[in-house]
Length: 390
Image (tube, rainbow, N blue to C red):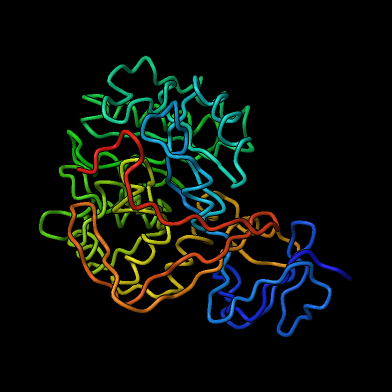
């Protein structure tokens, strides 16, 4: 039997199955057809030697912005996400009900990587990242949002709402209520962007349901974060987690500071999922990509197994796609990321510009999407056109 691709000599790390050992992975017709030690390469059309590297499920980034030309903060999906090891990304609210048909055609259908979406409760989506989308509640139509989600069940995985004062004015809680109404109508979760609100975070947390997602979980933008100025996690966050609410990193340009994250971890509050919140104002730093964000959590003391789980099986579970995404199994679609673990001295920077030095980091060395190996794109270090380096 001939096969399209064989990945040899790598250490398979698959949190969904508990595998963490040396296996070869055989891929044919876009699917994993065998996974065992010592598979023969004689009949393989292409061979990837993954010696001294990790072979993990295709990374899943739960929070990105990839609707360029419409949502102003967005980046191109394939070069910044797929080309850096994230085979599945979820656009977090760049499109609303008015603009989602274009998102499907211009982004999803034009991308090699898998692109899903949280639909913004505002019909216009995040056309301007700074003016906000909820200052006029007429744009937040739950019935219309739910109808768009029900018409696109293959792509829309939930609803997004930003409740910060800068983005919603006095309408943060009203916008959240409308997003939750859409969620109930479409039987989908809500992702809520927190921080910088006019109300206490408990007002948000108490409303959330099992399966809903808090993103920017470690924001230091007060009021409205779950970590107090005293470095303690509010009780409502633990209560929300106990009833099934998920807490996502959403690093972004302003939601990851070493001190805040360290305080939360010291208080025993780890993230459920690690996401980048990648956009054009952080793709040249401090975020760069999902893998760089994972490396920051290695520096903070999490294990490689933990950070890979938080970017594979955990986001797959948040999307209700266990067994489909974020796993390596015979018969599954062949989405894989190969990661090197480099040792040395590496500068990692938080959202406040504070730099720390890491002794190791993860780097993507190969990516396979639906059975095809695609090129790794060099890390972007210069701001995109139109973005000030300051």
